[in-house]
Image (cartoon, rainbow, N blue to C red):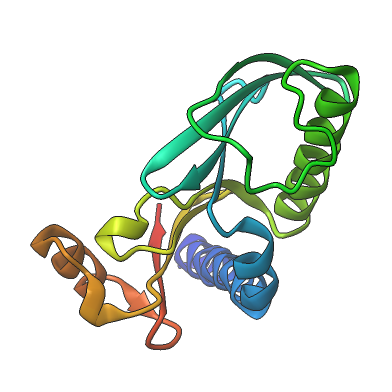
Length: 177
């Protein structure tokens, strides 16, 4: 009986901390929308590579960074449109200032993700009606921001979102184990 009670207490604590992590992201929703609009940041499983993308009218600009300690090193980029949405002062691709500004921008975004315990954030599904898909660090929690439910194009997303829990009419989440 004691083990059942202990398991139950652990289970409740685990669910509570997951809800708190989701709530922390939700409480910062305006900042997330402002900072991450048209940007995606995905970390490799080994957390030693970051895939950073910006999106503009169905065209994506991709940057690949290797992580060395607390430093990010741009190793490759695929430029499909200019100017970039980041508002960099130097848009000369490959210049020292360009790389510094790009790395500084990524550093700020990743720091905010870490503060909110976000592992990955994607905003490449806008045409499908999805503003963001957010993956949390410490468990398989997922959040989705839908600016306008009426603009969801694919039946898949409507079904997926209907199966999720709801913070409000625009923010949805799942608690996966």
